[in-house]
Amino acid sequence: MNPLASSLNYNCVLCFYVLHKKW
Image (cartoon, rainbow, N blue to C red; front, side, top):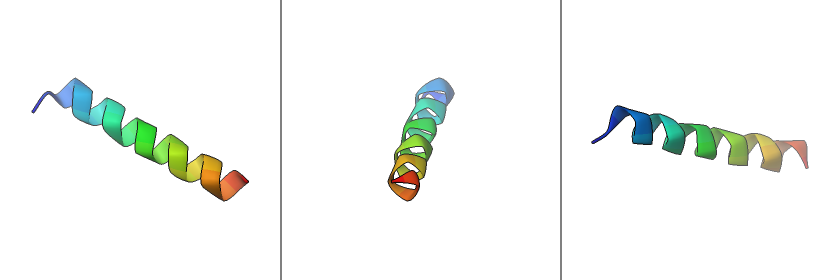
């Protein structure tokens, strides 16, 4: 798997989690 893609995926999940927590 591409490390960059994995990092982006992790970032997306983290962002989604933070957004959900924020709201």
